[in-house]
Image (tube, rainbow, N blue to C red; front, side, top):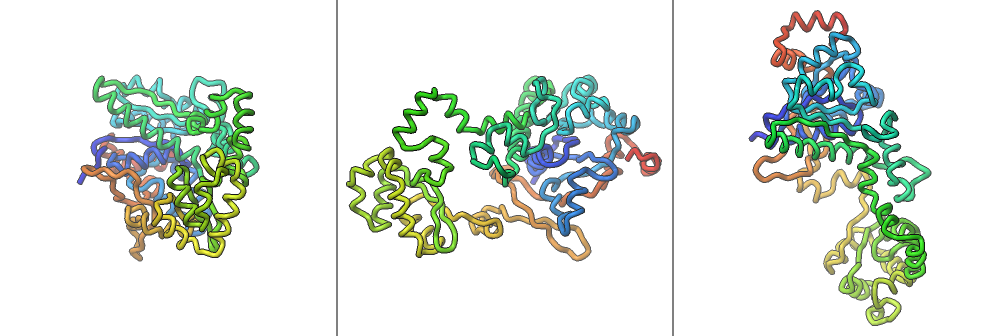
Length: 404
């Protein structure tokens, strides 16, 4: 069965996480993705080789792709890429601002030879902005997009690379939209993704702040007994939207509606709270959140997380165990969804490489994990031969010159 994007060809110059995430999504959906990197390998590959037993983790980002090597800093290498570009539908890059232009591979140069090309560029602050020249990484995107502050982690690095990974996903969405536009008009186009833009787009707290004037915020604080930010991330936050400690872990619990609150009252052995004016509505429950937390903590403290999860679920209270990293890799629900996947390492010992599955389920054209991450330049002969007609002898000469 061919994937939904079968027949779409992608030339991927990106490295680290954001661009490779975009191309990984396209590859999983069936596109032919050719990863371009220097003969020495991209920086991320080099880093992984330095960490014991981590080299195969590259498969997470580059599964289902092919790989060619080229040194675009050499004129012959840049010219080789300019000849290759017209054979592809999509080009992806997230290199330092100005790098692709420097070697004649920027969008303005490329569209002249490939007008139907869809060109995705991912950067920290976007093109044509005051900070367009600045290099950025995930932590900088989360910092400048306000995410770190909104999550209360201004004094330490974020635990998940949302700046990179979400920007890559949005890049893939942009490519799909641009392909649809090209189907209708025949035109290619530039897709300009700013990681700061993407993080701000997800910053619900910042949007809430814009919605309310300072006086409104003071009024809100008086009404609910705390700031909007404190209620979601502070120790004394919302009683009905928080993780609670069990004797062996934590369980995240939500009981927003009156029905859910009444169920919680019965579960914790406090049925009288259902008619207590201190807890008559959402606002009064926020004001008296300390007492609610104490009662729920007392009920949970001598129970296991699994037991709490089972009881709350039986009463249709939204809940979920806070899974540690080692546990989430064995979660039965993720296993049932095919998210705990693996791919053949194609090694003599026949071992498999563990990796996450694909989270978009298409009934008619499902995504597939077909191959491991390729080695540097593994598909040089296939790609350069198929598209440019180069022979093994041609490639040997280019390799001797350090071009590939």
